[in-house]
Length: 131
Image (tube, rainbow, N blue to C red):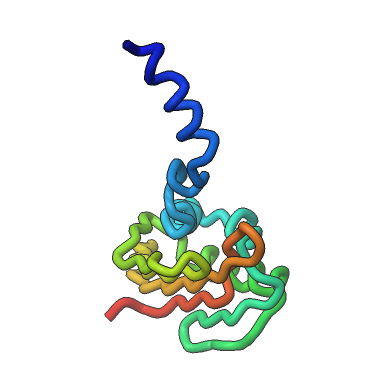
């Protein structure tokens, strides 16, 4: 009986989209925020990122955005990060809202991602105090 399911299983794993077997990228980003891993977060940045941290908003290069995020984490070391809202109905876009708890307070993080090729890149990142 198990042998009869084996070819079907091989076909399913071969043709199924990898995204079905992975967590959503927004979940991964939430874990990176919890770990304050700016290096890995910045790997997900588009070449230009609209970044807003505590009402300071502008468009930055990947390297500049990584530095600003690193400075934010130095001032506000993360304690926990969870996804509170996720929109993944469009195959080319993702939007997520994270609740970020830091040693200096709670923040709302909004992440917008756009798919280029087969990869999602962060095009906009907003970090603001949670109200």
